[in-house]
Image (cartoon, rainbow, N blue to C red; front, side, top):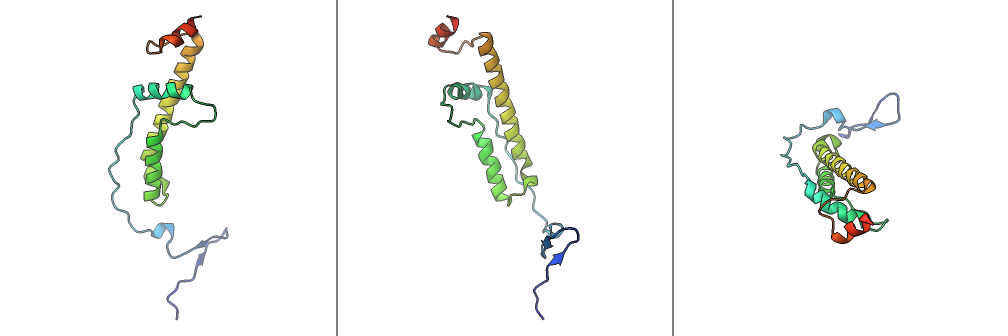
Length: 128
């Protein structure tokens, strides 16, 4: 007799379930401590200046660190999304914060309100 198990078929669909079902998975160890990655307001302002002057086709992302951390977590945990939700939350928080600052800067630019940290050449072109 063979020690190999036959695949088990579930009713309702054509998928097979091998000997390692999702319910039979081995217990996992404790989760690693997670250090939150935060992008400061000043970093976003500096990034937005470069973002506004970039070419149309150039891709820029201020949340690159959060993206890398979430992808590394996915790689480390065999693409189990449940174990990386903290990293996804950091990424979404960063994106929300970035989009808020972009909207605020666009609103100010459209209203003619200029920040004090803009160069003098930009102030002259905006006032004329």
